[in-house]
Length: 309
View 1 (cartoon, helix red, strand yellow):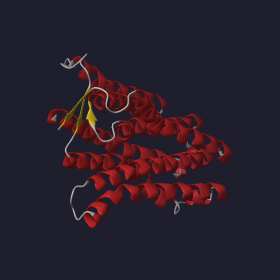
View 2 (cartoon, helix red, strand yellow):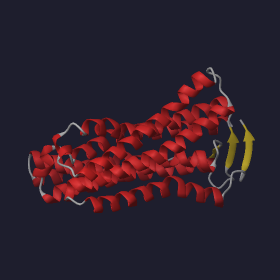
View 3 (tube, helix red, strand yellow):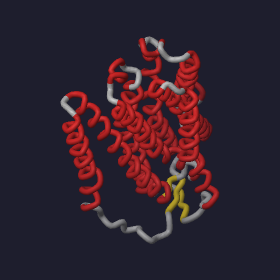
């Protein structure tokens, strides 16, 4: 089923495009709290910045969910079920991203010109994204010729499975990239010295988690070149799959711990930040692993029509 495998690969490439768009804004969102001008913002704008961060984290959670679905539920196989899940995840991811970007434009417009201009910029941006991302595609939507038919499943050739798992590593990597550079630079910022010793320790723990996620995601190419001498093997696929899933755990921990640091900067309470960090970590784990394990339990691999590619 070459057509099915091609669709899965395209969906992963589309997820990668959206993650690349999200990573820039997510990195800025974390950095904004440590900039000198943050303390001069009105209280409602500081609250908006925190809401924007939460929305972008939600968007990232949706974007990376298909990776866990493919590795845990489908075990590297391609299926219509995976395509449907990926489509829904990407559509859901655009909504919080649009809201987060609109809030950031409001904050920027309010700071540059005034409150009214900020509202206008946010509304105009939200309307533009709603038209481009939802209205136009829905109006031009084509009917799925396979709607109502039994789900297809296929096990692609080994070479194609290797391509897919490496693509999934590239999907996850920008999530770590968004934070790693900021975290390393943050220790040199004046605002970092004003954090409590406990918050600085939490930041370092978050930095270690993101560095670990980056190392895990870069391990498959090294394994491919050094262990397998460039050959595609089942062992490489299993190793790469384990590295990608492990990186998701480390990434979730790093993103969540940094939320605790940001919360202290936002309202001076690290305990509240740790509570929010725990909630963020639980939500990411539930979205990436809990949902996938539940789907695997309810619809185990083997359902539907299988065909070797």
